[in-house]
Amino acid sequence: MQRFTFLFIVFALTDFSGTVLAEANHAETARAWVTAVNTSRDAHIAAAKQYMAEDGVATQSRYVGFGFTWDPVDDNSRMIVSRVTPGSPAAGVLKSGDEFLSVQGIEVNAETLGKLSFRGAPGKPVSAVILRDGVEQPISVTRGIIESSISKQEFLTWASTQSDDDWSPDRFVIHDVIAQGDVAYVWSTIWDTDNVTDVPFETHAITRIRFNAEGQIYRLATVTEERFVLEQTGWNISR
Image (cartoon, rainbow, N blue to C red; front, side, top):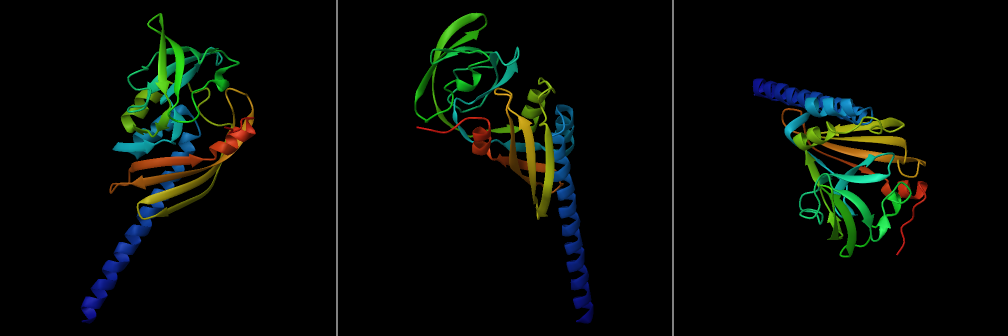
């Protein structure tokens, strides 16, 4: 009986120490990940290659709109589609390389980029004119709720085509990292400058990372104070 009790205690302590070690490793990886994300494009790419599982997925923030991303071109005077979110209202209408010329009759230029009607109530159609393969064509997209995620390979492919100039914020601080079981949370604050209005802002960010059995990042998502950012940069939400 004593020998059985002794063995049980040994196994329990071994399991406990293994859990503590795994959680410490998860916390260290989570801190390294958030640091890389906010340092540079190359650091972010290197972290994805090192820490993400091959089937790892990053869940992106939900919003109401078309469902595409674009890259600033010619000092933010042009809007060219870089990626269309699968299953979004824009899927089947837009494709990578399309350039927006006007939205709801408003010409796209450096002064209007932040005033275009991509966001707003879901279910409302928005007309636009795009340039595709040198030919102008009218389109209409009905706004919808966008829920999207990006796989490791999708991220690496996209990131390799991006500029490092505006990748990282002006400054960031990690306040706390907590790991429990296969999940880690990172609380940070980010200070940056809006690339459209050139107005500085700050936001808290909470990053949740889930690890697989091998200690690699399997799922991750970051939540920020998006409305607070809009208010700091001069925008408001109205009906």
